[in-house]
Image (cartoon, rainbow, N blue to C red; front, side, top):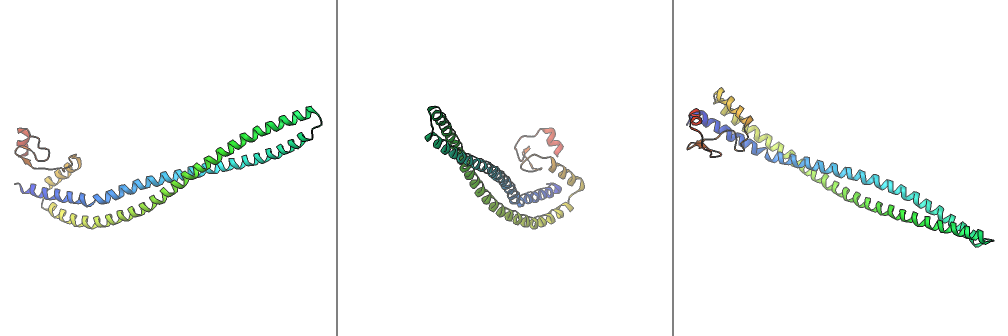
Amino acid sequence: MNPQYEIIERIYRVDMDAALVTHDQRLAQKELAELGKRSKLSEDLLNKSRTEMSFHEAELRRLYKKLDELEDKKIDRLNKLMSAKNDDDHRAFKREVDNLDRDLRDIQRRADDAESKIEQSKSIFQKAEAELRSTITASEEELKKAQSAEANSRDKLGEIQKVRDTYLAQLEDRVCQHYARVSKITRSPNGPICRVLEGACGNCRISLAPQILSSIQ
């Protein structure tokens, strides 16, 4: 076997080891990013539900004030109805009382609806708040995991790089440059190089044309 190829294989195995070392770190960072997105969604939902609650509470206060005013007005008209001196005054005050009753029912319905919306917003707010607390706790744990993985991988990668530099020093510049170039453009999950086995690619097992085999040799 070509000695240069043996060295390249060793470099390739070292590169694969380096990729495995950083795998946990990348997973932790990915999880951290996902938790960050979840935190942002929870925060947005908290702000939205808080704004909606404030709006409905202000509306409810306005409706309660209107109810009190209508109740006072109804009492006044009922007193006047009881002391009406003729049929015309009686009918007029009765009509006003009926209209006030209708308005009171309408305002009460709107107040009940506002209370229902406040309860819904509170439920959403509490759920988002709990989710945010859970996400923050998980984020802190994932951050520690990512920092630990980074520290461990940094030490291991330092050791791997020393071994890689030793192999690179034994490799011809032309071969080294070619390996580096192929490493950047390859799409194979098995890496940038493989053996030729029985006239076929050692990774995908596809037979190679005679001219390609001749070129490789």
